[in-house]
Image (cartoon, rainbow, N blue to C red; front, side):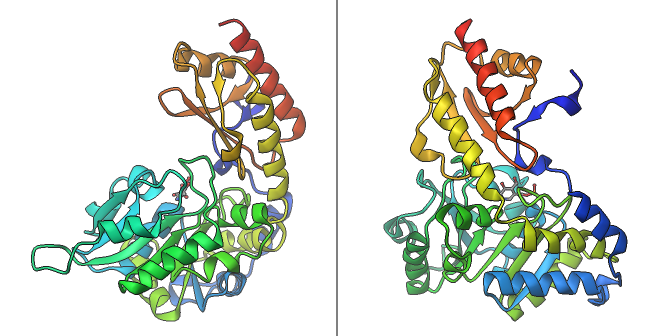
Length: 347
Ligand SMILES: Cc1ncc(COP(=O)(O)O)c(C=O)c1O
């Protein structure tokens, strides 16, 4: 079986652009975005800011670049950032928070994805000549390593209260924030109104080939624009990236519902299979994570799954993650369940 025929459940980053997106790229009005003169980029940025209820927005190349740029725009070198111990920034962004931004990450474990306000209170130390100044709290919504878990608006509000109390800023890595809003059936602004600024990705479930957006107030975005430049992220005719982004925001959000339905179906059926330990209450959006029985060899399981036409990956030893996205239909879900049943019945 060729790799193109595989059912690819590794990530929602594997989505391909729609025909409409490709057409939009072909016909996009272009200009030089380093001069802020690309009309398509400007249109996308205005649309994005309006959609999440903030003053301004900035298109960047990736989620990683969005997080790093935002950290640097929110903080000065040497300051301290509270973040979740399993967050994407802490795990998967090559340590840019320290290596490039010069910040001290202070990880706090919150298996429900949302910090309890008391956890921040407990982690705060008195202002002192010996301690770095705390500046920022980062949250991740939905939370990748916790299998797409949602931080609710109420939880965000509680974190925001503690941030305000201690003059800290609150930033949201909202790579998949539209998954959260669709899953809870509430406007995305209900989440974003509690944070100072955030980023979200166009290139995940929303099907764009490239791009993420940073959103916040005008000052924050102006600083971010200059930081993006120093990071090598000033792009010229970036309208070819922005054109599909506009389609993503206008047309691709509601369909995330289908990805959630497919994830739920996967979760419900997999939870019944011997050898799989899966808690259905964790299947909240487009991800399904489960633990394989320790007696099963994880590498062998993944290999056999691939031989059966399904591509997926392990998040850590014996923890498997499946991600649904555009291009994954109900029949693919059925094929995946059948393949897993077959493999595990032979163990
Ligand atoms: C929560 C979260 N933040 C940031 C990123 C980084 O995005 P990118 O891969 O576009 O750099 C990811 C990527 O999967 C993610 O899941």
